[in-house]
Image (cartoon, rainbow, N blue to C red; front, side):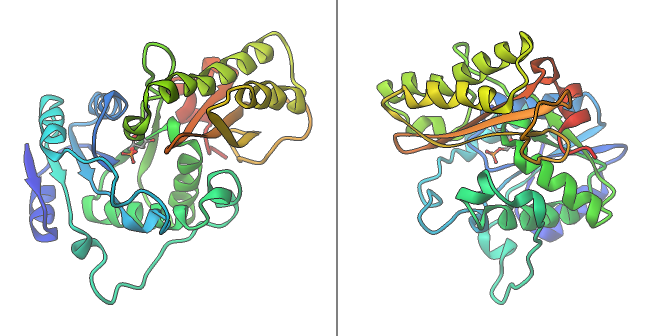
Length: 294
Ligand code: AMP
């Protein structure tokens, strides 16, 4: 596995890769969720590139950029075990040199939900991902359903800017008790770790209602809202029920695939979780075929 930190070295190493090349962009502090993305894309490509970069432009000034957990040596070991060919770990000075002034902005689908709470977040995401796409020139890239709005936004960007990269969507990897894995889970103390289960439990309950035939958006949203609000250590940020393809909030019952997503503050971290409805779509094939596909 080659580890490169400069653009020249990246271009040389990239040019030497043969066949179909897959990209897994990450911010590091890798866990099973990241590993599952590396595995899934590895099965569909000849060579895998991973990037590790804590991108400052997607953090607001009051967010956890300076304390974001990092462990590069452990990350390299995991990526090496998974057969990754090339890892790119750029510095801030390399990605945003003095005088930097170009940003990529996606409009409609960045509004509301994560974009409502974090108004500058997606501009940072689309800018860095566009740069990483240009630098690594992959045939295919994979992102997690965990950050479902990010998938919808990136698919919009790829479509609008005619970027010839296929986007795969990996299902959410969870702890045995249901908590979605996240690098930020390290911030949770023991009582908060228990309280954090409310996200997956509330979504699972709503999915059960959906399976039993409930289609009223207000009722499905209320299931999640009431369960989260009953947990004293949890503060609901938003709960959203949107069409999986267009990410428009639904007001009426529909048989279209839906995305039910929730953001909850539990102690320090804001935790995200979601489910596609029907929940049988929560697979690589299901999410790739529905989330942000228009
Ligand atoms: P991050 O390092 O948090 O930027 O995440 C890198 C990629 O891993 C993103 O595409 C995330 O959506 C994805 N990811 C994060 N958590 C999970 C998880 N629990 N299961 C699957 N993918 C995940």
